[in-house]
Amino acid sequence: MSEARLLGDGPDADLPADNRLAGESPDDILVVETVGRDYRLPSGGTLSAVRDVSFRLARGETLGIVGESGCGKSTLGRMVLHLTPPTTGRVLVEGETLARLSPAALRRRRRTMQMVFQDPNGSLDPRLRIGAALAEPLVIHRVGSRAERARRVEALCDLIGLPREALTRFPHEFSGGQKQRIAIARALALEPSLIVADEPVSALDVSIQAQILNLLADIRERFCLAFVFISHDLAVIRHVSDRVGVMYLGRLVELADADAFFARPAHPYARMLLDAVLEPGTTLGGAPSGAPGLAIVQGEPPNPEHPPPGCSFHPRCPLAVERCRVETPPFAKTQGRMVACWRAG
Image 1: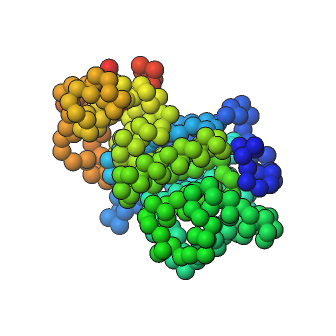
Image 2: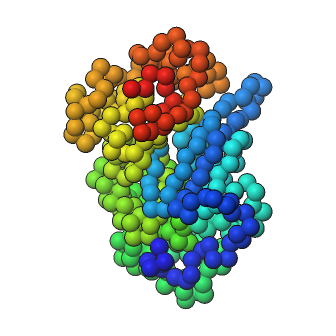
Image 3: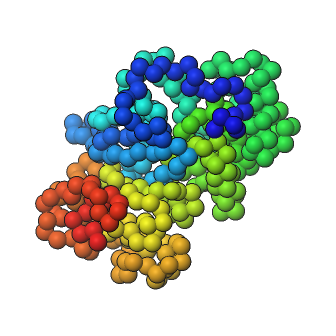
């Protein structure tokens, strides 16, 4: 990323190193270890929004997280950035455990990790002109002089393909796709190494989605960024991801390389998700489907306040056996990927 920086020596030059872990791969931008998030309910019960999720993310890699609404993928994205602290487990960014950082150190660390939200209308201040909105992160983190900030804002405007006169306008003067471009530019202002994109194209027209996805792919390659890309749309996940993680009722049930996943998912839920959006007998890559006969996910997800025993997917799974109903499958390696299923195969 150093060759493509917009300004300065980079946001992590002044970060303390005393919280880095020995033995971590230098390519691991993000390490998520058995994280969970519980919420206390007014009834006195507990809702586990995320349970026992682990994965790693390398520099320049995109991990796509997919699942039904309410599966916990957005909560996981917020935990990655410590916007929602995990109840259990830990999150490390470039070797630093976020929960162990002092407020000042966490503030500095936030320069290296940013988020692109689903709704740009909610993430852009309607009272700020676009130039001020793009400069705001630089002002808050005291990056550069006023002239340097102005140059970076202009460079960001060029990067996202908007004319520089757009900097004097307000958010309401732009289309949804343009506003999302502006939100992406603001996320890039501090030159992060990690971006969490939470459904960044779901509110856009299909033609505009393609433009935004191509912009994100170009940015990732140009700056060697790591992305956690959250979406319910498997076609979008296929377009952007190096690896795919499938979530169900707060847990990762499959984690695989994208090519292997779309050629033949191993978990029944993942197979049913994929087949539900395809023509019979095909995959998103055009290859023959490896899971005929599982085309529709039946029923509704269980109440997360009262998850079923054993495998949480067993009430909806056509392959479930007695063991699935009483024993929770471990998230273990099989077929060259991680899968939580007794019937994976």
